[in-house]
Length: 412
Figure 1 (cartoon, rainbow, N blue to C red):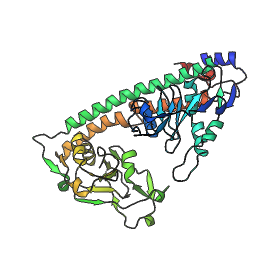
Figure 2 (cartoon, rainbow, N blue to C red):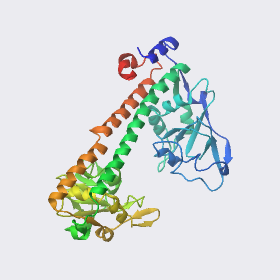
Figure 3 (spheres, rainbow, N blue to C red):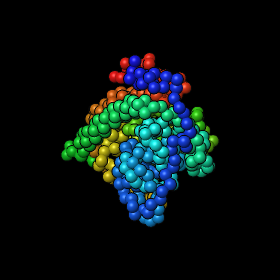
């Protein structure tokens, strides 16, 4: 029997108290002048996208006006899509804006901030928050509904043990993620060294590599279907595909596209619109065998080289620096066909390209493939954490947790 089950049987064998959040917490309402916060303790809604809380980076401090003060230990909840699932446990006193709800506990001798943080990080709360959000274009969470959300409040020793278990899960995942980050940096260094210009390898502009180069044709979000013709929209190059891919995640209907532009096996796709100069013109190779549609703001490059080699060499720092010469317009970065054509890369013989591609594919898989190595273990740990988090927080009715059956595995 686990320590947690012992505590539950001793302190709450018949279940625990469940109460609306409003009975144990309230929203921070104190307003302070913006001059009382700085870049280290101001939290805007964009900060909630960061994996690790602490120093702010994504949000800039307002120039003037007032902000809502929060305290160390308050739970900060994103209150506007797409940030509804983003939750922080404040590690310092600071200030925030109206897009972030600062939930303050009435009595911390009755409810631990860390326990409340895990409760409000659950999928159940997220679904509840989404279902009660209001607004069409940019839905907001309902402050009233959040305060009506029912939470379990077990005795403090039980809360503490649950927090200890879940902290162990998150710490392990953080350690694995740090190791994976180091491996990715090692891979990028190795890739850039392997593919840097050499005296015995010619440098060639993409205009001389291409047998054909052209832009895709627009496919709107609401034109993506469950089946039909495989397609790629430019945003998916940033969010979905890595170095190369063999199957499209999206489909559309041919009648939706007035002037269809196709890509086929071996073609390189460039996303020519983006939010960052450093990422603009991210490219990916298609190595599948279906004929697919290229969406708008995608440039398709056809060639007779090794597509996996081109994908790797176009991801190097040297290539990215050439891509970053795009123009910024209305906070969006753009590139174009002439700019892409001017990118120069080292182009060895096809057999050397094959050897380079094979070596880099193996290294890349260790860093990126969710089926093997550290990525697979991190993904498994995240799912395991979410499963146990939800199980640990769902014992209120019966006073029993799944740990009774799996205490040996969980303790380990």
